[in-house]
Amino acid sequence: MRRFLSIFVAIVATFNVYVAEAQPKQTIITVAVAPENTDWQYECGDDVTFSLTVCKSGIPLKGVEVYYEISEDMMSPHKKGNITLEDGTMQIEAGTMKRPGFLRLRAWATYDGKRYVGTATAGLDIDRIEPTTSAPKDFDEFWAKAIADNNKLEMLPRLELVPEKCTPTVNVYSASFQNLRNGCRMYGTMCVPANIKQGDKLPAILIVPGAGCRARTGYYTEAEQGFVTLELGINHIPTVMDDEIYAQLKAGMMYEYQFYNMDNKDRYVYKGIYVGCARAVDFLAELDFIDANRIGVMGGSQGGALSITTAVLNPKVKCLAVFYPALADLTGYLHGRGGGWPHPFRNGYMATKERIETSRYYDVVNFARKVSVPVFYSYGFNDMTCCPTSTTAAYNAIPTADKERWIVPEIEHWTYPEQNTARSKWMMEQLKK
Image (spheres, rainbow, N blue to C red):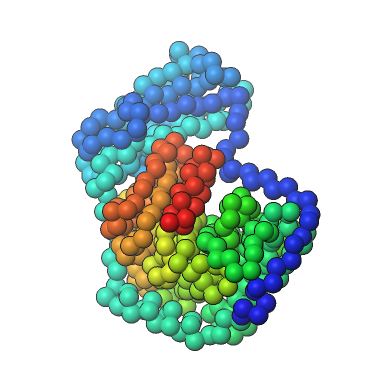
């Protein structure tokens, strides 16, 4: 492997990288909703009151018609109605909850024939939210065998320079290795500092992906600061192809891949993904320019889930940073509360005995219970993709005392630039130690 990994080519090219934050677009009309408590948190039994204001360019609008719903996280609304904001603002009594969880107000305002929505979610005794799932007795044995079986497969690593993506400070490679079965490869986009010297041992960051099928453009900023980054794809296809190819795969063969073979724990699609992400750490550790003792993993949504599973399945991981992990407490819906993406058991959908049993082997909560490395963890209360009941349950299950949580209550399934900056800063500080 080392014979073609120790040679680097300095490329002088111009490549501007723009990273767009997946935040909602701003509109002239805003529906501002917020609970009275500034941290959005309460104790069970406390009455929760939300303020509701509809503004145009920041000025409250009078006489606006609003439809609203109040519900527990991801549950059907237990209160709803139509109101008119005579003065442009109103207080709405939402009641309380007897058990730890989240209480949400959603409001839709109609102005000039167009509908606008606002959301706010109060958390009640969130530190007491416990998972509903449990690990099967053979959980450790199942995953030890899965890793051992995958390790029997020759890795056959490859690194191929992608000149058109390189910059004067960062060399970019298409990286791949064999995974799951003969001829099946997992791919990623690797960024390496261009000024690396023979004998250098750099820290590395593995970025595991959110759901979907798309190109992986690479993480340049961290590479410019002396870190090797590998942005992994989990669909076993190259990560540097044209966007049209990914669009066709997403609409075709990769459509709803997250449910493939869920009725069989040995064939569920995430088995190959989980062991593949763990193998990506070994791939990095064997590169002769990487310090195998300084490898971290980070990701959001599906990538948040994969960060946690990878840190448990591969002891080489030194730290992990997580945004709103998916696949957490999937069985929540079977207990009358929100469950994790991809929500297989919502409204009884797919809730067969076989799928419920499979979920126990793959539920991120059962991995979170085994995390032993430092953790950075951030999420919001308004997220209805990876709902806060599920992500909080996963966080509470992490036993290590060395965990840092940053709640940004108003965010949905997106992040602010400040969160991304804080995550990268935390990760790089951990790997400098």
